[in-house]
Length: 67
Image (cartoon, rainbow, N blue to C red; front, side, top):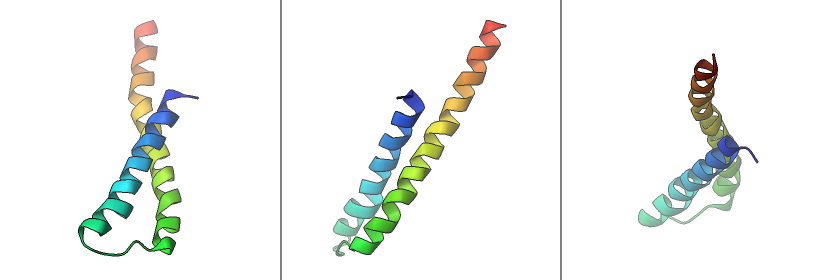
């Protein structure tokens, strides 16, 4: 699997856990199943977008070094 995909999924999962699981518990709120089901794919897609955008600068720098 490509490195940017792994980085993006890890980032998305960490953000999901922090924002959707840990923060409500710190505020003494109950976890809502519907909110978790909605936010999980959003954070995963956001993580993939993050991984893809952080991949781009390093790929273009590698091409510049080759020429």
